[in-house]
Length: 153
Image (cartoon, rainbow, N blue to C red; front, side, top):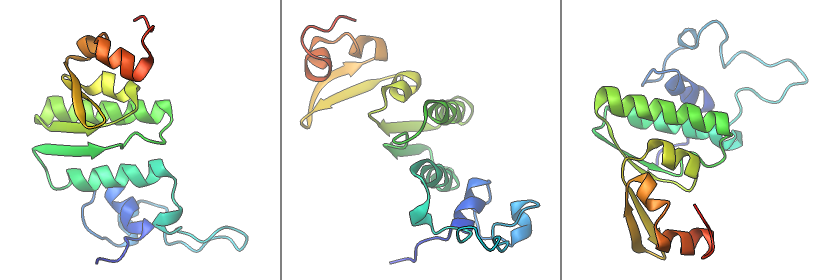
């Protein structure tokens, strides 16, 4: 099993370089600069990063391989709405500019509705609906399973 990457490596990947580099590749402020005496250890281990700060480098590492198909599983979980919107824009641009196909497993409907051209909805492992975002949000099975029977759209 490979050792956990350091936060410095994750920052490097997040800034667009795909390999480990010396601190000068991080810009003027080095992530390995000694902290002030009262500060928390820097850089913190990746296990102490917040979910958004862990997810962004994970997506960048996947993109560094220049895939034709990108599989994303709950990458929007824990993101603020503005962070979610930023990720959506990046994925939209990659799809439009590079023709990248994205398979997204996601519960953040804000992201699903903004990104998806086609949606497949599962309930207990069974497909209950498929179609465009506009079709799926009006599907009676989706409304009953996820929003309740009496929901009006």
